[in-house]
Length: 585
Image (cartoon, rainbow, N blue to C red; front, top):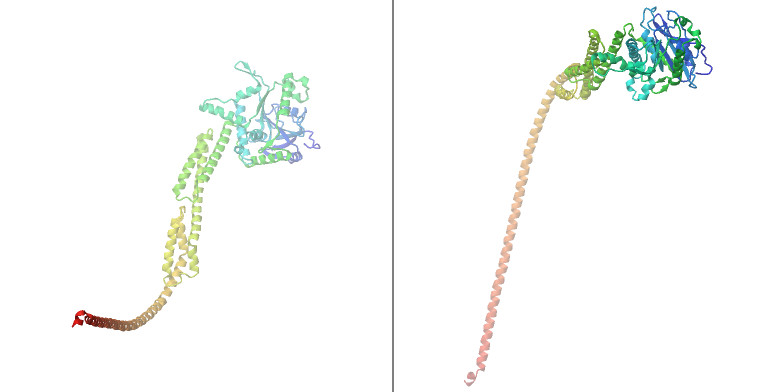
C-alpha cells in the first residue's frame, strides 16, 4: 500500500441493503490508490461466532471490526480493512469481514450464498469459521458455495479447464483455513492422537467404493478438495467464561484462556507467513485496481443472474449442479455439432441423425453431472433447449441451403444472363437455343454436391424469376421468324439460281476441258506418229547403210579374190615358164 494511504478502521466494501448488494464507491477509491500487491484474507461463518475478533487480531488491533455481544448480527455486507502487511515488505494485507450466515432477523436469506461466494472469489486465503466440529452440514454448505463460485466466475473469467499448469491452478484458488470455535472434541482417531489438519483431511476423505450413497458422500468432498488445493485447520477453545464474552474486545490476553490466546497467535502467525498474494489467472499479481475490478465484476455478475437461495442446501446444490449440468450438456452439444455439421446438409435426415446422436451424448453428459434431478425437471429443461437447438439448426440449414444454391445459380447461370444481355439469343430460333442452354446449365447445377434441401425449390424460384426473360426471347424469336423465313426463301432461290449458273458454268468448263483434252490427245497422237515415222525412217536408213556396207564388203572380197586368183595364175605361168621341161621343149 502506498505510504500515504492510511485506514484507521474498516469501511464497508459491499453494502447489503434490503437483500441487494451494492459496491461502496468510497471503498473502491481506497482500493484504486493501492499499487502494492495484495494479500486478501476473507472470513465467513454463522453469525455471532467470533469472526470479527479474529480479523481484528490480524489487523493488530483490539477494536475495528464490530464485535457484538448480543444475539443480533453486527456486520452487514462485506467490510474491508487495508493495513500494511506485518511480514511481507511492500505488500498490503486486505481483511474482509462478512455478515454472519443464518441471521434469524434477515428473513430473506437469498444473498447469504452471494456474500459467501464473493468472499471466496475475492480472497487469496479463505477462513471458514464454524462451531464445535466439522459436520456434514458445514461441508454441504461449503460445497454449495464453491459450486456457486464456479457459476459466478464462468461469465467473467477464463474457464479453469484451459489452465494447464497445476501451479497456476494452486495460485488462482484461495487457500482454505477452517477455524473451529469452542472446539470440545478430543483430537483422536483409532485411539491415536491426530493434528487439527489430520482431522480436516479425515473429514474430507473419500469413501473408496462406488455405491450410490458413497457417491453422494464423496461429491461435496471431492469438490472441496479440488477447489481448495491447500487446506489448514485451527481449533479454538472458548476464549473465556461465557459472562465475560460481552467485553471480549476490552479484555487483555492475561484475562483470556491461555490456550485460546496461543491458538489465536498460531492462527495469526500462519496467516502472516503462509497467506499468498492474490493472483489472477495467468499469474498476474493483484493490486488495488485489480481487486477493484474483481469486486465490480462479481457484484455485477450477481446482479445479472438468478442465483439459488441457501435455505435448503441440498436443493440449492441440486439447482446449482443441475443448472451447471444443463449448461455443460448444451456446451457439449454446441461443440460437437459445430465440429460435425457442415451446413447445408444434403438431406434433412442427415441433419436429424447428427442431432439425435449429439443429443444422446449431451443427455449422457447431463446424466453424468446431474444431482438429484427430482421429477426430471432439469432433464426436461435440457430437452426443451435441445429441441430449440434442433429447430434453430433446421432453420439455419434451410437458410444455408437457400443461400448456397442462390450463389451457385448465379455462378452457373451468370454466363447465360450475360449472353442474353448481349443479344446472343435475339435471333430466329434463339429461344430454342436459349432453352437448350438452360437445360445444359440445369444439368450442371444438379451435378453440384451438397446443395441441401432447398436445391429444387431455389432452382424453380430462380427459373420463375427469369421467366420474363425467356418470354422476351420467345417473342423476339417469333417476330424475327416470319421475316427470316421470307429472307431464307429468297436466299434459297438466289442460291438455287446461283447453283444453276454454277452448274452450267461447270458443264461449259467440262466441255472446254474435254475439248482441250481431245486436242491434247490428238497432238500427242500426231507427235507419236511423227516419232514413229522418224524412227522407221531411221531404221530403214540404218538397214540400207548396213546392206550397202555388206554389198561393198562382198564386192571387195570378190575383187580381192579375183586379184588373188589372177596373181596365182601369173605366178603359175611364171613357174611354168621357168620349168626345165618347158625349156627343153
